[in-house]
Length: 187
Image (cartoon, rainbow, N blue to C red):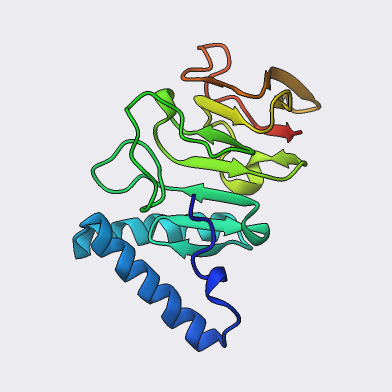
């Protein structure tokens, strides 16, 4: 997974960092065969997400990273259902695509829609990511045996919805848990 396209280019002044990001976005748009209007619509969605979730850095045409790349949101490319980085292979529909040592939440069933991923061990309030009450499928691809616990905020406490042990995934959390995830403990 390409997480920090800009960060790998080394230290830069703000102006050159902006130019590098623009060049990265333009190159990825060409690689993905996107039209100008598709890039503009994708950028609108990225800008909205960054406004809802401060502290992120756009790292590509369809990705935002936080905490130095330890949390990443990927948007589906125009015309695709499943989120993936531009240089990430498009796998078969209905299959998870969470990189090894990461845990991923997906906006829709069958691992479709936005993908929100983590690689560090923390409790995460999904409201901080603009992703509360929006999880319908998941993939725990951390090291074997590592657990992720997913919770719903009841208004007064965190109620456990499910626990996953790596490697495991679910293409649909079920009607009782759909769009109820508000937090998770990774590791």
